[in-house]
Length: 485
Image 1 (tube, rainbow, N blue to C red):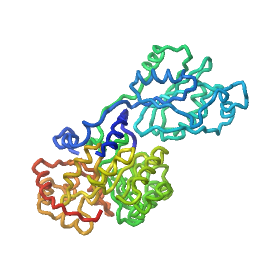
Image 2 (image 1 turned 135 degrees about the vertical axis):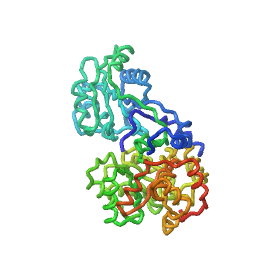
Image 3 (image 1 turned 180 degrees about the horizontal axis):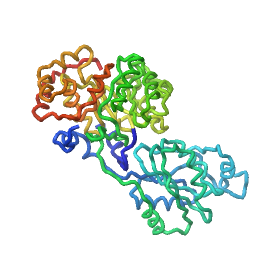
Image 4 (image 1 turned 30 degrees about the vertical axis):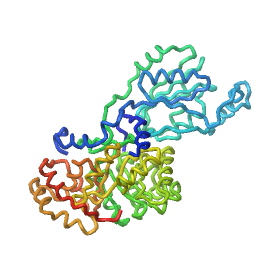
């Protein structure tokens, strides 16, 4: 699922929260406004969609990078070598010096210290470097190969006394996928002044920005913006209890009907089938949002479990991995998920079956605020105290068992209140329940192996529940949990 064009969420929110623990035709309807008001939009700082990443040894490139960041109001990231370059390392007259040896070896990839947090937020990257023997230093290759720059516009700039940017930039193109847009770069000399840099930036045609708040449901695109910077569909398919063959049929039906969100888990035993169904589909991989989960039995070896999930599904990356429920070693396992984000293996991370008390204990121990919390939510178990709390943290809420689950579906779908509302709108009881969730700002992943039901469960935007109908369903809450999580 592609990033929201031109949007970056301030990272300060992530660390603050961790520290405190703490389609209707009318898209501006009261209920869509209510959804947005119930999210953390007021707690989010929307800044730039631009990152300036640079490598500098003498300070010249650093100064240019600073001017670019100031002009574009971009975030800035210095590419720092794990082993710093000494004066001797940079002796161009010594063929055995480190810099000369690296430049002579096209496979050299000097290690980088640290990484860019939430790289998926950025749509534009200015990439700066000094010219070494007519080319970009090999550490720039390390940087480009460390992240997924799908759909990003990269604008190179270099510093040099005489060499043009020319092939130094062109030779970087093959290090990224062909989805990257490369704009012509610019060389700056040591005597460049700030006005020269500003004039260059003004000449560029940068992607236009569009502000959108974290947690905000877009009923036109049918997506929600996560705090990781990625968009996620607001309805999809849960694959719990589906066999491999059922998975293949169900996912094919989902994708054919326009659904793009698939939820699985290690414990479901069908990750391989999910991956195969995705690979067999004609839908581009980047349009599909895949969620899987690590089970507590995997927490002690979480890094290996992440790699196992990737291998099973045969995917280059997983859109989101959750911890399935609290258990021994869950903090360490989550930290492994954080590392997987830094490594580009996973785009977003989150939790399943965490409630207020568990979150208050857990969040101060981690660095990246979960993008999602997935809990049991349906009209008989509504979590009306938990949902607003989670949303106030800038975390999206997703509900499993939205139709009651495990022997309770028939009773819920046959509920007189829900049936009457369904009849009034000319829709099914299932559609009423799923729409009720969406109007509360809860993403839904109903499970089904019936292609007709799957299509029906996606058809939620031709009607809208009134305030009275929402209240009638809210009054059905029994605090009746249908599973032990």
